[in-house]
Length: 136
Image (cartoon, rainbow, N blue to C red; front, side, top):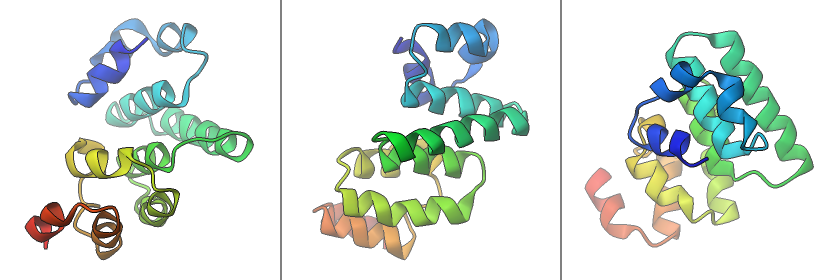
């Protein structure tokens, strides 16, 4: 189950294309982090309708159950939904999501967000002062 996530963390989404979306989701219970991988794979393959359908599913689930704001942020940013991603930066900070600093700084789908004033403020509040200084 973690193999698709590992593929995503190294920036390779070919597994979703090779195995197919349904096969990847079959054993995961449509877990939000696996949905992230599938949505980003669709986005990279320029299957925008499928990517947005996955995003909409994750947003709907976030209204009924806890979904980490960082997951929503990565998916929104990876699909080019920049305003939504910027809004989620602040929410991630309010939630004190501990995945926020690491993924914001080192995950490809967060690129362009770590240097925003909102992200720098959240990183500062979470104690990542060296990274804030490096990015400023």
